Amino acid sequence: MAFTEVMADARLVGNSLERVDVRKGERQNEVSRGDVLFNGSSETPEEVALGAVVDFDVPQGVYLNSFCFGYRLTRPGLIDPTYLSYFFRSSVGREIVSGLAQGSTRYNIAKAKLLRVPLSLPSFEEQNAAATALTQVDDLIAQIALVIAKKRAIKQGMMQELLTGRTRLPGFSGEWRVRRLGEVLKFQVGYPFSSGYFTDVPSGVRLVRNRDLRAEDAVVYYAGPFASEYLLADNDMLVGMDGDFEPVIWRGGRALLNQRVGRLRMSTAASDSFLSHALVRPLKTLEGETGATTVKHLSHQDVESIAMPLPSRDEQDAIGRVLDDAEAEVFCLEARLTATCAIKRGMMQELLTGRTRLVPTEAPA
Image 1 (spheres, rainbow, N blue to C red):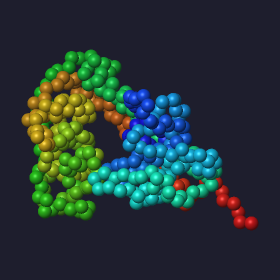
Image 2 (tube, rainbow, N blue to C red; image 1 turned 90 degrees about the vertical axis):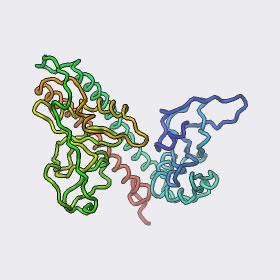
Image 3 (cartoon, helix red, strand yellow; image 1 turned 60 degrees about the horizontal axis):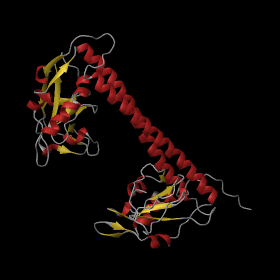
Image 4 (cartoon, rainbow, N blue to C red; image 1 turned 180 degrees about the horizontal axis):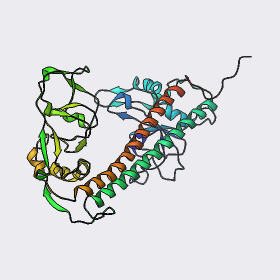
């Protein structure tokens, strides 16, 4: 039973079993359905002893990883093992466990010490009801994740066919022409705005830095003077010039183009939508070919020198719409997945602390 699978999920379904050589006479702990397993160490105290219940019919010869430990419940009807695994992943359970973790660079926990921790638990019936509710949400999360993976694979296949001309959309048949990107676009490099005008308070104009193309965790605003040529609008295509060279369609509204971020300005012969998909592979190839000791850097000449086959503008637009629709479908599913995960976190906070009860309590006599 893999260490990483124990850490990853509250329920183990046997998807990540790994083969090991067991010597004759070597003592190993076999795993059974209903066992509650824990990782014995982690880099942070908050991730030590994450509970995971074995939730599948285990074939003979499945053993517990040496970096894990587990408990087998011996009194049926007292503690629901699935509830217990969720409990030790809740805020209440994490608070208990992190206080027991010991270490400096890597944290460990003794299974005997965890075994002695007193727990305040509801009745078995209420445990089972809470565990069932959380299991149903987890199943929904797994289903959504599976659909996302399938939709991504479909989109990837569509890109390989449509962006190479192997498959043509109805109504298009003309030859594609190999063109250097410098013929159909200009690469605008961002301006080195003075950090003295930077602020995290919503004042002035939002600044788009390299990191903002991949995350929204630290928005910065610029309250100083600027030239209008560096103003961004929705649907502008941007490329980070340090690290990962990946085209991004900007959706954050009015903003300023900071240094080390480039904007691709298309001529009438090129479609933003088409190139946002078609440039992924050549930019990734360019990234792999760029030598660097720490961070890789991209120049405007690198992009403008890329040569690639391009169909007519009308066909570019049509291909872009098809791929945009496929991408939008994935985005919607990802948003649904994020919302469902948030619902699960809220349910854990309510059900595993007793704030919300699923089984009616007995009325006083």
